[in-house]
Image 1 (cartoon, rainbow, N blue to C red):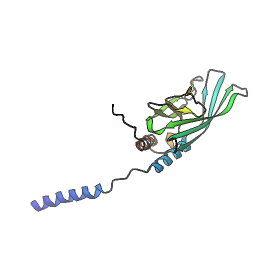
Image 2 (cartoon, rainbow, N blue to C red):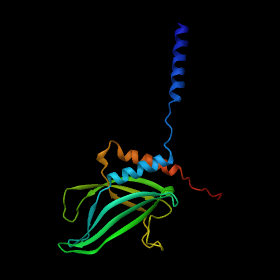
Image 3 (tube, rainbow, N blue to C red):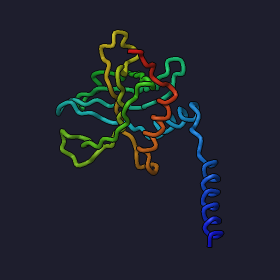
Image 4 (cartoon, rainbow, N blue to C red):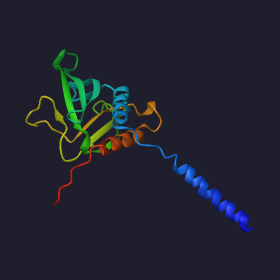
Length: 185
């Protein structure tokens, strides 16, 4: 009987030792960046924001990249503002934003009415990237006049299983490669 118990205990210890060696390694910085940029480019979509009954702005052609020198995710997109049934009033303009990766503190999912002015029952899902301590800035905004603490855009979460949680994990891994400097006091 003691031999059976001893064999049972040894088999459990052996199983734990062999499974311990099978722990997955963290993806490299390059793999993490490539995965995030690929998902952002693949699943971000165009959208329209209504500004009253007569005006709307289209946000289109989102392009994401990574700037290794600045350690930021670069977001470029086109904006055009229209008066209903009239040619464009403003634009098209190309906007570029920089998201500092070391201070990203939140990746969120939001679901909103697509057109609250028309009271439609169509919803749009958004990916929201928020930062802490600094701001997401525009390429052409040298004085930080239009800085914001988050950026959001429509995102097709339904294209892959568990995409939001996987995006959160990837951004957490990315941030871990750029630890914050700690002050003594």
